[in-house]
Image (cartoon, rainbow over all chains, first blue to last red; front, side, top):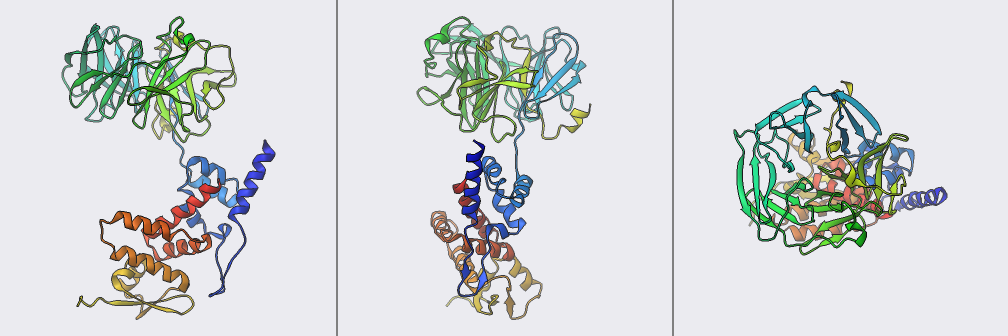
Length: 373
Length: 121
């Protein structure tokens, strides 16, 4: 494998450096790739994708230093572990494979609900309040009182943005849902009942994702309800759930689902104890099975999942779960390219994981202060 | 008859002189700066640009200055054809675009070279 890679790189280097041509009219040598001044090389290499940037950095030392200097790498989400007792929280970075421990007394008696844009949404049952918390800046924003029963809640964007909307769907009957929304600056929640033509079951097993002004709600049976935040409408999408293999309908079949969005596309991951996960993408009339994620990495946790590209230290076309094997400090992941889990194991029952134990969160660009504390 | 536009003289590295309209010459921030700050005489010397390259730069600037602003498709196809050349000449054009400080031309040539690398990867 190493020999093949070496030969390929040699071929690239040769192709780029093929001979010198003398400009006949002026007798001045025209520059070669290797003689390009650094500033021009930077302009060219900064236009390459991360994959190509890494590829060409092996051509020669000069190219390597330029490639590294212009390389743009995205931040991967971190796992935030909620302790069963106490206030010591664990944050795990899968790219660096580092763990950070932080005391967060502000989160005592809180249950995590959702995470997005450096913020987490939590519920405190004793005060019946939902609150926003940024573990990196320690900012806390309380919402008006609201009794959250057996339902899940999500938000559209960071609460510091004026457009932030918190959203929850509660089951009233198979054809009626109760939708409650709140903006962090509001004094109370607004609740409206909606009728849906198609039956829809809203429960704690539902998944919520916000994209392009719409809240998508995946029911435990795989039907999608869509709430339009602009038009204030609720419709159950006519696209039937994907046809999974027979084994997926064994015990706890409704539990092991994850949903996220990437560039406007809605993606759902179906898992099953003894089978490989399947990723489906929502299209106009059906869910299509994805054989590849096109270089994207998915981070799946029960309450919220994320999609990322251009990451270092993490596999592309893979799904990362919130379980870390501390021996070797690796996150358990599933590779679509290789059709297997890493590390290899007989089965993974993601439906049996405690939903409030861990969640993927998005760290800010600069977390040096957080790390020091 | 159109109003008289000022003509600028540009001398290449091999002493060939090109006469161009001021509007065209001003596509180059370097030349614009030299003229506005009276750093040049009647002829502006460009010792880093050969006449071959300079001729092509002038061709690019002429097309971009004279084309109507909303005709994006035509400019796009012109640009695509323009950089469909031997990569050694492309290097020369990129160097000139950088030296003469013509942003759109620099973007075009550097992207063309990045595309060549991408093909080889």
